[in-house]
Length: 169
Image (cartoon, rainbow, N blue to C red; front, side, top):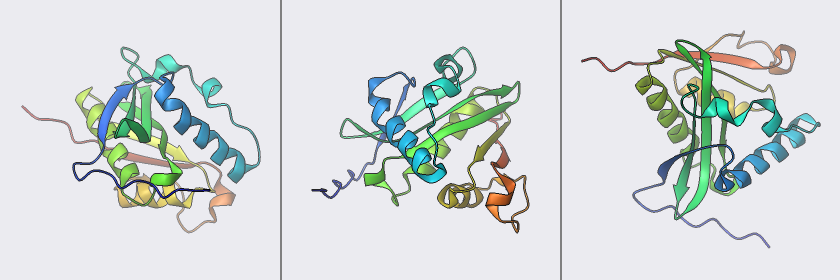
């Protein structure tokens, strides 16, 4: 039996800065792993992809969760790509909370955090079988580094980039 998701409070979810090893992150990461397996037909072990330390200070990264009533509903991370670029990773919304703008809120929070840490650019890749992610990044002002007219499956991973606004004194 599936229950309808509870409505989010009017003040919305709060951002929690944490690590990929936080037990609160596990359900989101497990669901993301399942989604990758379903869409791409092979297992993905996110814990082996990058060490957790890459997503925590002082290594230049961040990992955050959007929390609603003490429960994670979305999350994402970035890691240092180079001295001026943060690479966004693992942006994900729990399946019971999609179509509410939460992924955009995660994206905005990650961009703000990266800019606050001195990064001037963000980059990311998404898979060719993730049209929702492609649409999100295009709507959020990311520049595709691939031919938008080509079939996504013919490209492979779809790279994007975006300059960040830096705070001026």
